[in-house]
Image (cartoon, rainbow, N blue to C red; front, side, top):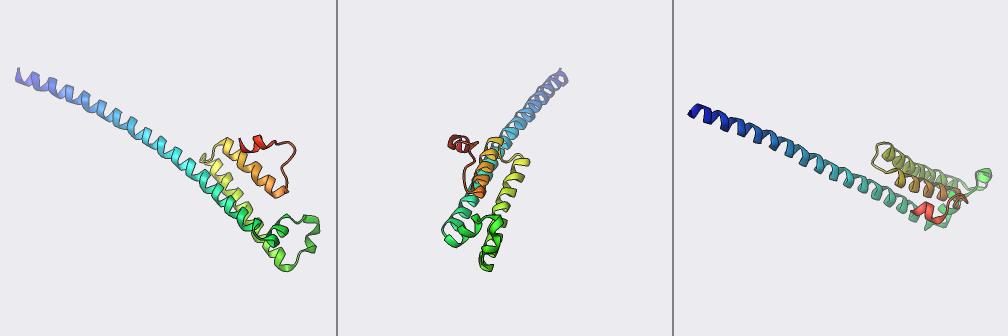
Length: 140
């Protein structure tokens, strides 16, 4: 009789233990989901901050701005320093683009964020917003 009661209690404890494991796994998966969302948001913020920093650096210096937007077919008009500035700025610019692309490939940057980022980068590089895009399409 006591042995049977102990077996019943052991069975109940086993069921409760199994439920506790399932509940803890659900809690952990929820926490991972929250962490992933936070990582994605932080990635997008970091990329935009990097791009904005680049914009301020190039935009605040007329020399750098001129060298960056200078047409490829007139590159020989640039001084040696301007050419170096252009190269450094282009490397930094495409480095930001590459970081965004890799973040998108690793699914840390959503498709919508990637498309917006890509359009902004292309718009900056081309020196104008392509006619195919409206302001709302770029920023929404």
